[in-house]
Image (cartoon, rainbow, N blue to C red; front, top):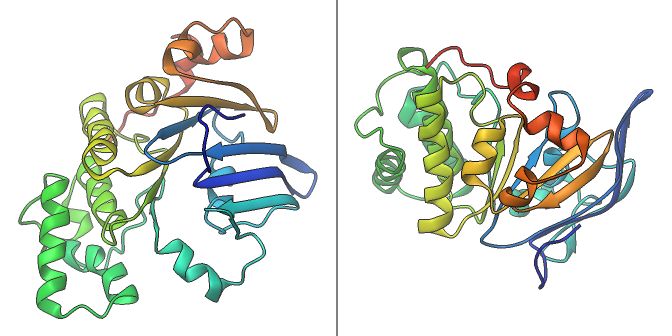
Length: 259
C-alpha cells in the first residue's frame, strides 16, 4: 500500500514474522515517504511494535526484505547497521531512560556514543534539545524526579539528539493523561513541520492518530486492512475499522494513568 509517488525512505517487501506458533506479520508490504507522519493503528499486541522494529533492523524478518533509501538493511550485521541507525530516532514505549543517569546524561548518551564533540558542544546540544521539548534547565534532575509526561519528553529529546531524518514513535501517548498526551502529539507535529522529520507512529490511541497523521494504516491479523488519510479512516465502512475507531471500540484503548 502506498499513498505517495517517488522513492520511499523505508520499504518493507513481503515481510513475515512469527514467534513460535504465533504469526505476527503476514507478507506485509509498506512504503514510507519523506516529510510524512505515518501512523499504524491496531489493537494492543497485534504486531505494530514488531513491525516498527523491523524498519531499523532490531528484528529480522522470517521472509521478505527491508530497505532504507534503496539499501537493503535486513541482511546487514550489527556493525553495518550503526550508520543506518544514526539516521533514526526511536521513542520507546516506556521511554527507556537510564534511571542512574541525570536528564542531561541521558540526552548526551547518543552524542557521546556517535560523535567526537567536545564536552561544551554536547552541553549546548543537550540544552537545545531540552528547550525544544519545553524542559529547559532540567539537566541535573533524575528521571524519578519527573512526571510521566516529562519523562516522555526527555525521551523525545534524546531521540532527536543526533538530528535524525526519521523518528519512530512506539505508543507515544500510552500511560499519559489527555493533557500530557496532547503535549506529545504537539511535539510530533512540531518535529515534522519545523525539522522536516519523517515520522512513523504505532499506537492504539485513535485520537492521537487523527491529530498527528498524514496517513493511517490499520494492522489486523498480520496484514494492513486499510490505508488512507485521517478523513478516509473516519469514513471507513469496513466493520473491523469501524469497531476500532468508534468510542466503544476505544474503551479498551488508551491507558490514562500517570502524568
